[in-house]
Amino acid sequence: MTEPTIAQSGYVLNRVYFPHLRFEGVSNPDEIKQGPSTPIGLTWNWRIIGDRAFEVMVNVKTEPITARPERVDVLAIGRFELQGPPPGLALPRFVRVGAVSLIYPYAREAITNLTARGAFGPLFLDPVNLTTLDNFDMSLTIAAQQLRENPALGAAFGDVRALTAPPSQQLPLPEAQ
Image (cartoon, rainbow, N blue to C red):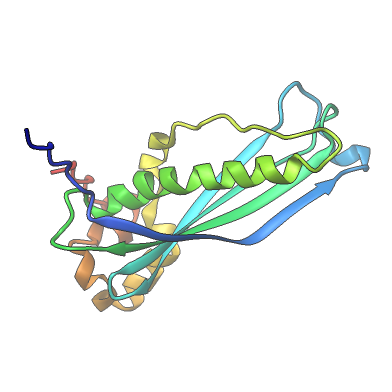
């Protein structure tokens, strides 16, 4: 009996690192929000760092509430490499959803580890439906700016027009092949 072949995305996660980790208690009542749950902010960006390599940055922040007056700010960066023939998953879709989905759990874990050392115990963030990032304006990213200034950077990644055009001119994202 042969093992089934699993289709690969064409991208390899080589490293995850954290250039910024911040955890602090908040005592100023003007900074503490009312409500039952901790407000969470999630932003992301990406940049090209080599011929076939790029980084995806995921920043997760929490704001203090009365029951948990502490603030956390974590920046997790995943370094990816394009491997082999053209990938089955187009770069725009991978960057918008796939890469962020791979890096977000590392940021969640860092927040849990940081807050575990605080007075209120570990904060466990819920998983997030990151497919909602699919309508994000890719023309605002660092990589889009890099590609507009130097289109040759995108040669290894195929058609990058969907990454650099403003939303009104963006091509629809290709589905996985």
